[in-house]
Length: 327
Ligand code: UFG
Image (tube, rainbow, N blue to C red):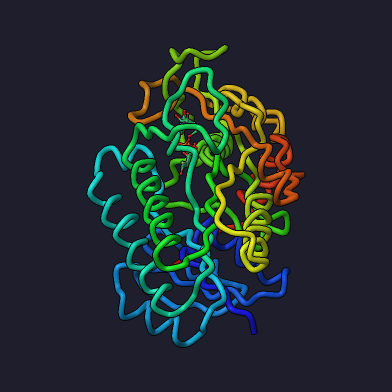
């Protein structure tokens, strides 16, 4: 069996990746501490509970499965929280990833697929955010991910860790079969919060700032369907197994949607009113993050076919109505 170690496999993106890996003939081994993940979401391969900061536990799991690769999703990933508690982000994300990379190197597991973020680019005006763009994060989350990219570059040179780094834009939607989906407690992401407001699980959606320098004053983001995103990871894994070398890829569509446009799309898909109010800007939010997205299409042959806003909201709404996890 060809095992792939999936850190964060009990989380939103990791669980979708496990489904895609299984469909591609791999056996995903989830490694997760269940701080933000859900045991219920582990459906496609074995589960090993553990923490990235626990080197002994990591060594045990590498020895048990001898994975051909690591897909590293496990991370704290909330921009707002990272501004309040930066130490949590540096310890968990950076020290945790360093521990994992060292364990992988010691186990001779040389292929590493890493979840980075467009938050490493920061807030840059009138710049196409392609992979060669300078990285100037404006929040601790983005800074922690950029640091891990640097660690991987070093380990690539000194320990032969082959790596593909994916810089995600805003991930949305859910598995169309609703076997897995987005389920955070507390929820902070825009689309699930809008859907909560639509079906009365929260009083209203608060728009964080309407005075940004964008056409309608709200932040603009590039949304990508989680199924398309994880398909790129399988392509990235094959890229590494084919010996094509270290590479960074953005994962976005190149289309920007404002917060108001996302809210409108949710209202149209569900045919419901969205209760809404306007609040202050959220610390750490960039004005506009839209991907220069040509590289993944050209080099990996990636085609983000499900990433139309309507499709993402339809899939998120189906999961929202039918799916949830319990610890
Ligand atoms: N927003 C609101 N109200 C809310 C929640 C969000 O107006 O109640 C706005 C945010 O201010 C932002 C947009 O909706 O402008 C999207 O916010 P999310 O919290 O859904 O996503 P983020 O852009 O903050 O962050 C997400 C991931 C990060 C990733 C980033 C890249 O959580 O891991 O996308 O843009 F780095």
